[in-house]
Length: 346
Image 1 (cartoon, helix red, strand yellow):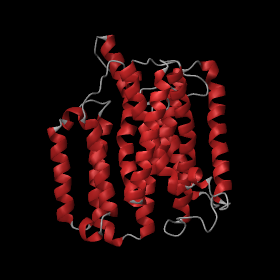
Image 2 (cartoon, rainbow, N blue to C red):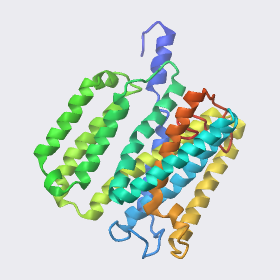
Image 3 (cartoon, rainbow, N blue to C red):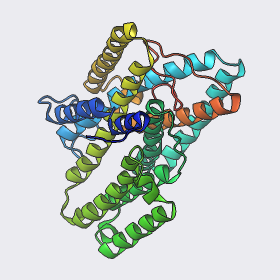
């Protein structure tokens, strides 16, 4: 029992001790498990990637993709509502910037190939994920003002190292001397960036720890890589993507609920369920009908990372426009989700 006579300090400790992301994490575990254990294939036998990826992992990866499309619907909806209520030039600037960014993404995808493009996009996802989480935390604890860049780049570098350890040639990834040297370089850089100071703050510590976690995993799985089958290697990576993605989706929906009136909860939750189920149903239909070739550009798994990259770009462009044009947030509405710093539902 606390003996601190100052009620304000006691309240601060209570707020810092809460974990508002717990319901989202619980749903994440359930969806990751159900997505993997689902007894029926969500795709036809001749679906691209079936074979190089096990059917169970492909089911999970596809579910992440289709629910990701639903997440994008709410994000773009929130961004559009905010921009329409601002200056007349904002929507045009946003659309033009996104078109240019999308073109650059498409050219990079063509030149780099799928493996490199996908890896770069998922590494790029990490700072987006952290930016959204820190924004959610700041809304719960306004006195916090995270500004240390190490919170963003250290987990990102850690995940890049993890990706490298999994997919680099075995002659490199199994060389423990190289792995330990890279890990040491990452940790020394983090220490120089004052990561230990971030570990002492309960609100920021999980993101600093995430960098150490990825580095530790890179050392373990890189060393183990010579024993991995291609399916195991891909499955391990997809599980990381699935958990991060599901958690991000659910946290965004939960944050939107926090920002709206209680009487709007039911309508918003129905919209979330309907949009997700509708896109999953359309995705299943497209996955079983290869003749719908143009629909595969939206629902096909090989193209999902392009839409992820476009979403990440839109979030950064939206945030930049809000700062440059001093655009204020609008109240959350039942369909749009939240109007956060990262772009609606991020």
